[in-house]
Length: 160
Image 1 (cartoon, one colour):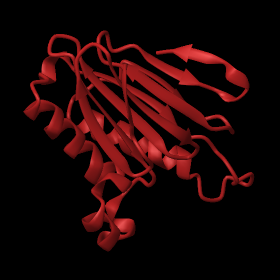
Image 2: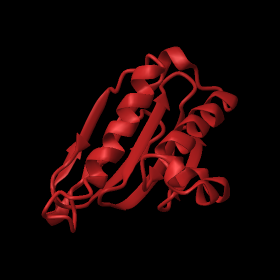
Image 3: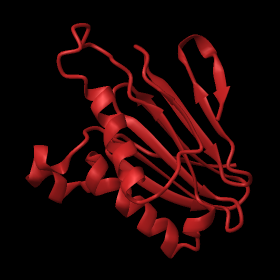
C-alpha cells in the first residue's frame, strides 16, 4: 500500500485502490479530506489558520497554511485529476482546543468555521466530521473506497 503523508500546511492528491493519504498531529489545525468514489480521486489538506489575510506573505509562499487559500486549491487539483463536484464527499477532522485553556484565541474553532463558511458559500455539504475536543488526532483515507479513519489518543479509532 502506498502511503502518502500530508504534512502540516500541505496538500496532496492521490488516486486508486492501494493508495492512502495520512496526516498526523491535528491539534487546532484542520484536515479536509475529499473523495470521488467513481474516479477514486482523493485529496487532503492540513491547514493551520483560517484566513490568508492574517499573513499575506506566508499565504503567497504557502497557500496550504490557510483555509481560504488552500481549500480551493485542493478542489481544483482534484477536479483536474478527474474528480467530479457532484460526487465529492467531504470529511473533516481536527480543530481541537489545545494549549488555550482560556479559549482566548479559539484557533481550532475559527479553523473549523472557516471551512464550514467556504463549503456553505460553494453549496457543498460535509459528509462527516470529528472536530473539537482538547486533544490531537491523526487522519487516514484509503483511496479504493474513501474510508476515513481518525485515530485518537489512547489508540481509539473512529471511522468517518
